[in-house]
Length: 474
Image (cartoon, rainbow, N blue to C red; front, side, top):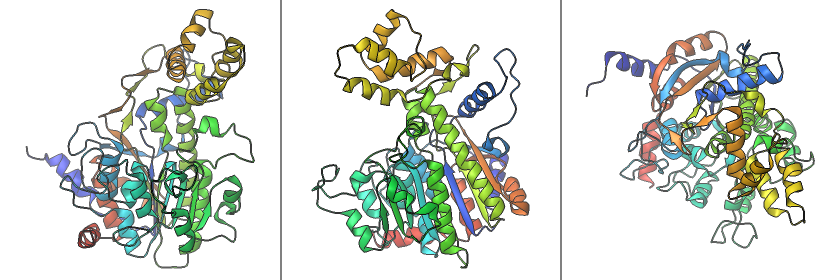
């Protein structure tokens, strides 16, 4: 099948590279659907304004609303519906691969990423996520494995213990401590004695594993400088809905706090030098909430993603040598908003369904009905259900029951528990003339592999060069 003239022109435009930023920020809202922004925008209009479903005076109010310039195709090399590994590899390297594969082609040959090429050419690099740092999307930019679930090998490559080019990432913030501890640690996920935290310290990393140690970084403005490794949970960081309710002294850093910290640290390391930085930020848990059909958890992680976009755009206004691109790797959940949907039903829901289900499972008291009503349903915004609904919610998978019940009340429909094959929205921002050119260059529809190719040209990098070096050392 021949490529159409329109599509050929789009692909050519995506390779122009007419902007020349010193710094690039790539934000991936994992699993974000176009409907995700609709939910968040409409919720704010009704929770904080005077809009109603019958009088919907809804205006653009999300930070991303002014930044949409196109859309991307998300299929992988072997499926119309991609997973995060294949989609992450496409966004990081400019190559399609199979679902479950990271940084390799279908034949097992490695391909270089935009982060690795930047590192090779003297740029500082960063990964900021709310998943384990060794999860699919950050791993696609920094490692090469046949199986995305080989988290231990991914972590080893990211910290420079076993990367084929002896590379490491200069700042990594997120979750996934268990893959860095040796098997002698009670919470380790490893089967060997490799101590990646110890290795990191030997390489000069400042290592943070809790709120206090994160605060010591002083949002990247204090005495602690790069390199920095901050992992604040054994696995995923908490959903934003749960994180914001944690006690302050143990509260995990938010994605926006970690973003601000990384920006300051990377800027301080590069502002007086010829080469800048490349940072990938992932709002990881939007995807997880959609898999779980948890409308409230989804809402608050989408709002936190928008807070990150606001921070980044304000940063760019103050540092106009920086450009940002943001695009979801795929859509998750098949979200639809049919007639009768009402986001006001989410008001009053303070936690995620999985966390509340864990609390219920841990309860050992005598009055389970009262506990369920007061400590589970009320914090999820479901304090007024009938006795029959109560009995149904308590049976089977409590977390799934809660999520489906709240979604049904709000009229939010989910067509799948997995990913879907729909296009994702492409957002971008830069200041002044660079911003105007960025809009021209990236307007329209693109394959996801076009995005790193565009950045390759804009940043003056060579993805083929790093691919050849990887294969020489594979």
